Image (cartoon, rainbow, N blue to C red; front, top):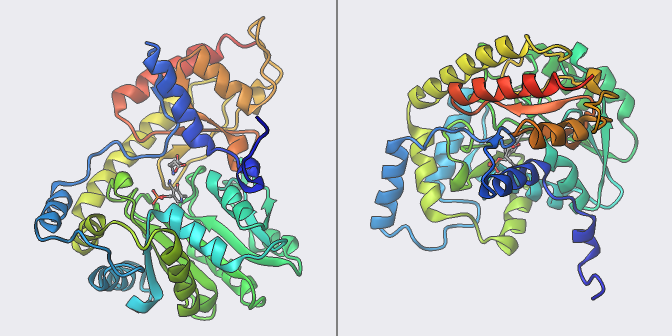
Length: 398
Ligand code: PMP
Ligand code: GLU
């Protein structure tokens, strides 16, 4: 039968993080002992007090449709959180709760972008940004960086990419996949630049806020002169180990919040009532559970960097946040084990999966074809075994 799917879906790529995770699940089902480090998901379970809040919500019949942008008490809790943690003033009316930060991002793109608008994505960028921009009919403009720049771009780099079609600059800090964290002064430089272009919106994805090994998380919306041009995106998936609950949110100028509410009113009617109650408990709590998880991630980062620095040919940065390392593996390009030739990072990811039984994600998915992403959101024993496998497998290549 002819392909009867829409052009939209035919043009959309499958999420490569999820595709790699699917492939490793298939190999595991065939009986292969694959270690999957392909998905960025905390291995911790959701803290008990958050689960208790959800059970209470069910018993108290929070089981109906909620207001489209979220329960007022949750939006109030988010407004308080923004002030407490980030010194940002967002009223509850400027907050929209959605089905994961991924959905928040889709709302923003579909609400603000027109065909042929350009969205600047400093690379490496999170895998879904490009596809979400494409879904909105717009074009992404990638700005390269490299490990030598700690995978960060400067205001000057952004300036060179701005055209009269630029509508957004979109990035994450801490960054998935590089783990890089923009400093306050780097953000200030970007804020000063974008303030000169009042029609450009900054989408600041801060979902890894709590997994930041620097002193303090910095939000670009803290600079008053840019705040009306910023959408701050966050959620509970990473910091509170709540990936399956699907709660993300934005703080934004009211006209953008209203547009996102209108958008999701037609798509989801708002997100799960029970998850919203759980998220409220998470956001109102003190920071002890997030701190504990952050400490565990920091210890794993040290372990991974130590063990990986022993592998010849890998170039590593020192990620200051999130739970990924993003080594430059280009020294392996052109090498072979006598049967398979490694031409690029995707070949290497497939080689490590098939020969080494470790699933990683090629940097191509993130706009950097020299690198490969390794998630260390798993136990130390598994990390040690995975790195041993990677080292032994890479040693087969000459
Ligand atoms: N932004 C970034 C940078 C991410 O890594 C993720 C993780 N999936 C998301 C957004 C989406 O998070 P979620 O939809 O689980 O809230
Ligand atoms: N953010 C995670 C990752 O980058 C989750 C997977 C996804 O949503 O694509 O792996």
